Image (cartoon, rainbow, N blue to C red; front, side):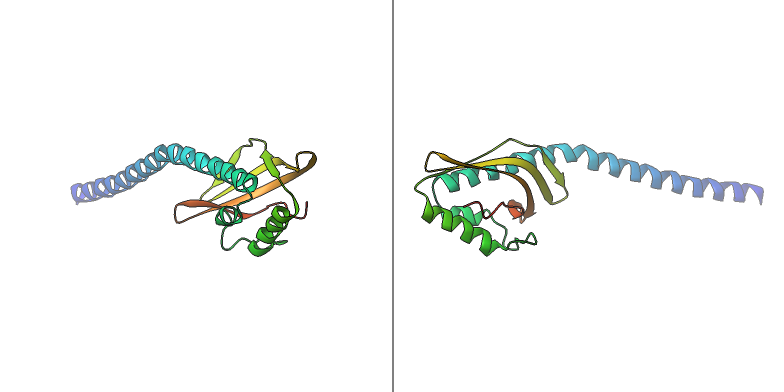
Length: 154
């Protein structure tokens, strides 16, 4: 009876050890893949920021609208309000340049946050500065702006 009980306990111990080993391996594997994917996401978010600046400089409302998530809503503005605000700026000013400080991209699952200083220069002389907390969301493998665009500057 003693040998049977000992073998049974060893079997249970082996099962527990195997479970722990598998859990550790899964954790290590998940952690080892994370940084590469995160770097790709940071690059994609920075590209989106550049595309935003180009759309504004070119006064291309369609290109600008493609950067805004269909479900954009930050509590103050909807997607339509953000696009209409920029359309109004495009119609009002002959030229608009948009610049931003390169700020850290904070990633969390399929969202990102960028806290940055932004500057609009209109008609070559008038400058508008603001602080922006931009929220982005990754949908279908593509990053889009889902909240935080500063509006009402124009």
